[in-house]
Image 1 (tube, rainbow, N blue to C red):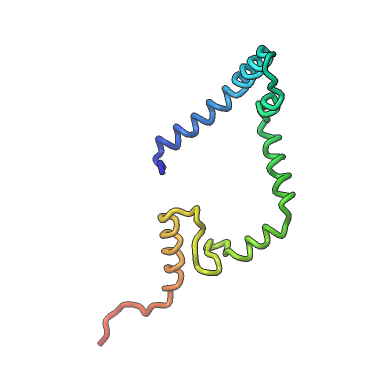
Image 2 (spheres, rainbow, N blue to C red):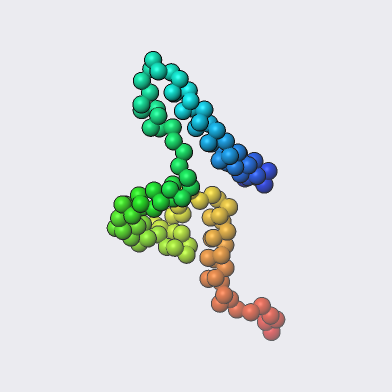
Length: 122
């Protein structure tokens, strides 16, 4: 909902802050888990890990490859890559109305090239 420059900047800075504070939070969590020996927290210890960015992207790529090429091909055949319209002429759900309007205007503009020139009709 919030698309202003200020909110985008705030979101970006919050993400940077999370990245900066992640090792500290992880160390604090692990120290808490080590001190409470009366409670078995093996499952939580496995969850509380921070991955480097490179490993995260490798994991994502691996999962995409695992999906298979057939899923990607099905998605490509149903949707036009240039106009983002599917076979029924519908835009994707994630696209907001401004983007739809802009793409439609671009599409309609290309169709109206063959109009007769305006001039005086004697």
